[in-house]
Length: 191
Image (cartoon, rainbow, N blue to C red; front, top):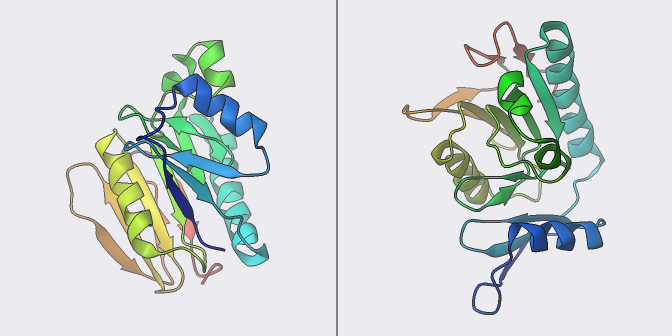
């Protein structure tokens, strides 16, 4: 199953609340909205991709439980970006002080915040360019560090503010740098 993109802008511009209601009324669908107002229906992933995603979230959450530096989020969480997009990374982390600055209402719905760190895991059905565009969109909205894990090509693209994309070949160990101090991700288990 491929990703489906519907251009709604000629007909309707969804407000944040309308998009939230659309998502809650269609819980069986994974929906995103890009900055152009296009509704993106993301297909579910298969067992291998789902397991790999769970491993990534587990590693990130284990580090976070030790450090207590922020909050970890799964691919079910939609973030409202400053450019109007509503995006759902496969794994995300927000620094605790930034998360606590949100109101309780903002935390309950789709938080209006860009994660400090995201992971996108390319599944077998994903085309690479839309994921690369999504990573660039995260950067443009304030992302500090992002990893696009591309198992098909056995590489990881590392995204950082004001730097060119770095490509690392798998297997590899990735480091959380100053964003996630002390976090290391061993990727030979996924390759």
